[in-house]
Length: 152
Length: 152
DNA sequence: CTATCTGCAAAGTGTTTGCAGGGAT
DNA sequence: ATCCCTGCAAACACTTTGCAGATAG
Image (cartoon, rainbow over all chains, first blue to last red; front, top):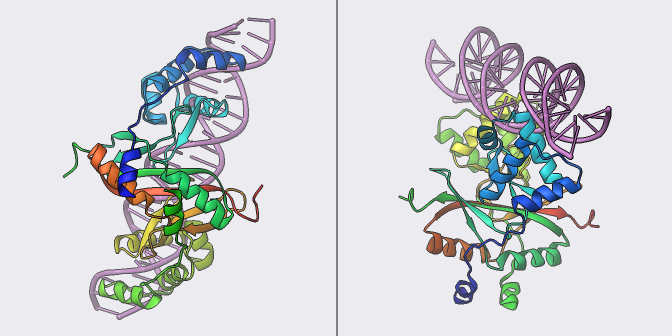
């Protein structure tokens, strides 16, 4: 079983469908205006694969935090970004069309790397549906530890 | 592979080591006093397998929320409870010696059930250590969806 | 022109801290 | 009697809301 797992294993490589242009188009279709602040936020999401925090976006865009929260809520509603939870009670979002993956969060330097799991979780979800009659809609899975540079 | 997985599968059945008595003993060993509020909190943890929130503990114990937060921090420091994250920015704790498991959170009725995964995540963690040279210390994994009663 | 967007201030929610009084041992 | 434990109020950090003024289309 171990060998089969290792065999299927697969590094993260994203197939992004969403580019700045497609997102802008989607915004226009929804009668949203393309303001400088909004464009900046979209660009930041397209340039970064790790989840972005409100603090980060405020510092990069110089927008008011209120506007950033509102922008994130909008992009979430339009299905452009999705929230990610690092258990630190802060909102974070990443592009929604990234291939399904999980995060490796270094508890020392806070660096975030991505990892694509094998099929394990699909098996688990199917098992849960069968055993518990629980209909799984989503899951949160993040790994915490030391990255290569910080690893003792 | 599917069959093997299903084969190993395993329902949750806890082997608790921590009882009210062992926890009280551990508190005494650490020169902590056994006050009525503290005893109540310990009893609540021993009676419930689902993670307990501050609000729940305050309502059950009639303690001040400050005291509850302090008590949780203490029990956490002594290794009696551990925090659990439901991505709702609220602190939750459960007994630490429950067999390693995960949670099925119903997004409608908020009921929390437990699920013990097969070995999948161990394989994944080993893979991560090898591929990414990332030393995994812990992970957060919670499933969200509809429980049997609330299901579709 | 006008509906959407923005910044500011203020309120809301959950958590933490400081301090003085109260209680377990 | 000692020192830990407790409640209260106030501070904190993050998020949300209301509103008046600014601006993309």
